[in-house]
Length: 293
Image 1 (spheres, helix red, strand yellow):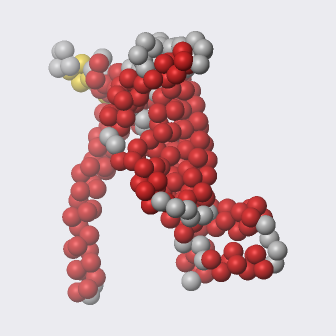
Image 2 (image 1 turned 90 degrees about the vertical axis):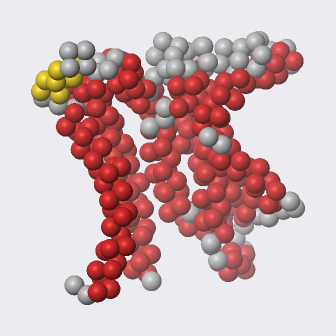
């Protein structure tokens, strides 16, 4: 091995060690713990095999949490992607005070999720929230945003859309600004309209950025916890209980550590299954660009 290669590996070593300590070790520990039944009261640990997984997969509450999680992921990711792309197309056209408005649009993404959740919880308040105040002003009945099974999950989705649409906007806008203007000029010479340019030039060239956004937002929304914890606490009933909240409940309220660890491994597998199409798209696009160069 040459000296330059050894130096490269030496510089990469701290990052590898940190990654192993923060990611690989906890994952292995969770996998091992999932095969045990841990009794904190009696300070006893018993090998449980796949029994934790069997109990999880036969628990109706777990499947309710899966349904809520999937619904949350689909609604949040779809609307964040659509709105973020629309905003990016609008801002890419250029207008007066664009930098100021762009900064305002990006502000929600910079706020801590707990702060966002607490702010929206006050806005959702039945008696004093701004939404019900506006409804009363125009003659509509107030809505039980967080205490109704019909509205609770949608209210959390709306909060997430408000905070993370700017992330999609930022990624798509950066991708739009990297498209050479010569392509659009050539299309205009050929008589292409804006809609045709959008369909046959812009959207195809945005596919890598869209795939990346879908991948990152799918992973992030799958593990949503803070907003559920602050806004609804998994309620009313289990209307907003997600997989992460299910894991939290069994791990930190009931102290069934082995069961919670097994549930977390099930969640990891589900995230991988949902992420594989996006990962293939991102890798395929990167390989195509590398071969083209």
